[in-house]
Length: 77
Image (cartoon, rainbow, N blue to C red; front, top):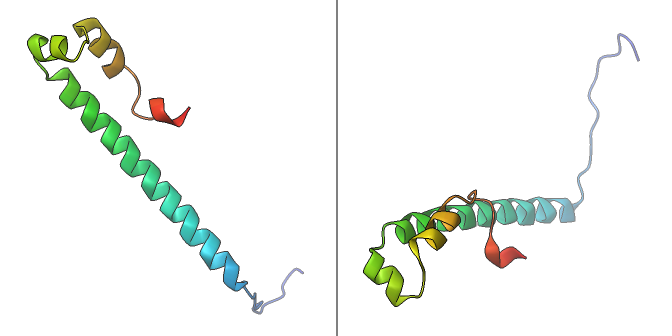
């Protein structure tokens, strides 16, 4: 109402804080996974051609993988 001043006391259920905590944990886990993917792709691109041959990958395979955005997780599908 216009001109009304005062405070409303809102009660938050106890399970709401648990939901928030698990949501924050999921966001943190996602950020960590994105950091891992970025780091792994950087290390993969730094391998020598001989090392790539040993693991059965070509430089073209590596270039294709390193061009992917950090949020594209091949394990999440």
